[in-house]
Length: 163
Image (cartoon, rainbow, N blue to C red; front, side):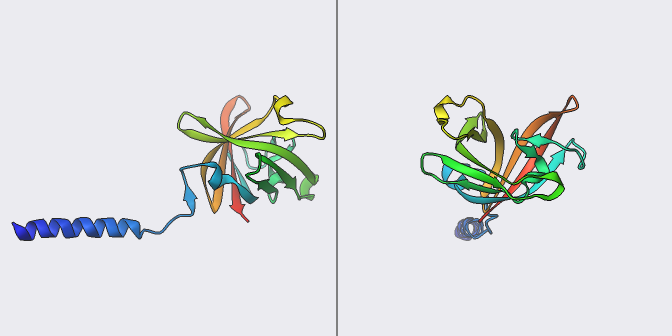
């Protein structure tokens, strides 16, 4: 009986030790401001339910593919930030946009939300903004935006890398 108890304890210790040494994936699903703040580069845009060659304007700014290579600055100070579009390929126009950002909990989903700020505007006076689901954040952050495309539900998936 002692051997059986000893074996059970030993197996439990091995299981605990093994799980604590498991490699980390660099992405957390426990999304909080600390895991989102920082400097990011948007590295990829994928479509689900939308043809790859479709021209889809996002954030009332530019075609989705124009955001590839964009720099996102999300500091912790008063939630002010900015993004900069760098590409001039395929009709894209370089642009810089000040934003105010925060996280919003919608049921069990964390959403990244932001409002554009133009010269002289105060965030409290801006009523329009944007929300994307945050699927994970760490060294990589993934956003998912559900959209309506030709009368059907589709999605745009954004991948950002921490700088």
